[in-house]
Image 1 (cartoon, rainbow, N blue to C red):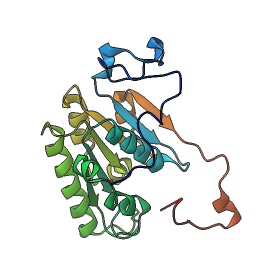
Image 2: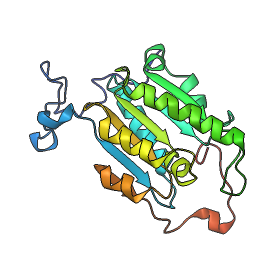
Image 3: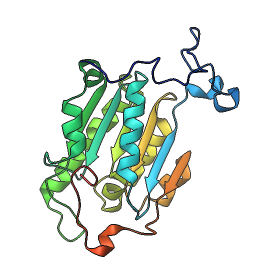
Length: 214
């Protein structure tokens, strides 16, 4: 597959790649700490604003570019009409090998008042995949999109998530997204970003757009 740029083209003219570390020699040592670079951390993206899934997809794309194997589990999201799924089908053969996507939901939006047994089963199936994958040694990053919602709805036991976060392999990066992140999960995380809705074009009556919201 032909790529639009080479590694050399993507670097500033004054930079080069170190043969020993594989990183850009122009990067300040203040921004790179080898002692911590091989450790995996727990990241949470929560809040009522737009951008939580978007942030996790950006992390996924960046990790793939560094040769990581990534598991992306889309909780509460079924169906096929998502731009990220279309993009994934067109990845290069190498990146396709590195990325595994699991949809753990039906093709509808769920709330506390409209949940069905089928919703619970889909999410349980996805959660079992996450637990096995976390200790398989295959992945460097696991992204659990909308998992905070699944916990809030009682579809994933809080204690099971706490056990996973507390027992995960040291090098594994875990990313959790979704509104209403539980305080006990927030306490265990190393990075928490709360996205607040200051302005949104939906307030003007603009509906979800292909390529932006999905």
